[in-house]
Image (tube, rainbow, N blue to C red):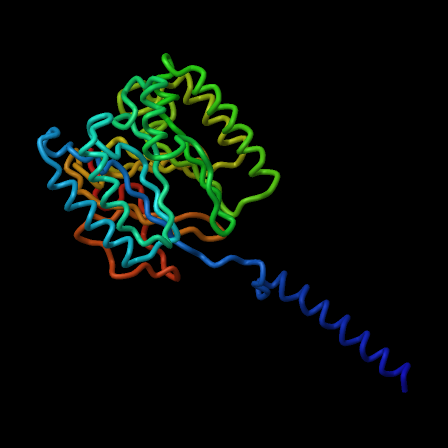
Length: 307
């Protein structure tokens, strides 16, 4: 009797093992599959731009609407990709940005990114230090449910002439962070910065709205080496999506003053195990909720795009 019970027990355990194996390969075992989530990217709230620093009325209205939307939709986190203000170091603009930002539900992390209007078109150690004193580090990483976000200060890449030591520190840190992320694994690895690497093609000429080709080639090669597939940025005040092989550069339109016929709005990004999907919503078309079970319809030229 004991022998029979042991054989039966072994059969049950063995059968249970093979059942789990079959379910795993059939896609039915979902213990290790993380649930999708979404985050919101805002960019270029740029307090003061609408009236060339005379007042902040329109920026305040847009940002307050965006914060109310964030609190209603409750994303996993929010990233603001630079140009928080229009005039570098302006106390009133900084104060208004921080006042409204403080209204975000404390349960929703918010990550700031340095823009050229935050540290200057040609940053100095002093302007970078002033930014970090007010808003925190200018380069860092964060994690959420297997997702890794890496925040870069693209101003140090755009114009490093007065901040060469800071640029070198950031570059070394980035390489170390990418290596560490590859060793530990990540559900998704995304770069956040202010300047787009390029707008349409990887070999396009240098201009105000992209990063210099000399440094562009070096960093993009690094991203490909470590499997970065997505970069979210701003600066252009219009929406564009461009690619370099598997690498997608998502340039998001402004929450503040739009350019080129676009509209003020926000980017909603859904993170799934098999990739990322995104859509820019004008402020007047944001849905009541984000349905993670459905495709939100990302496109090459999303709503609000313009040249």
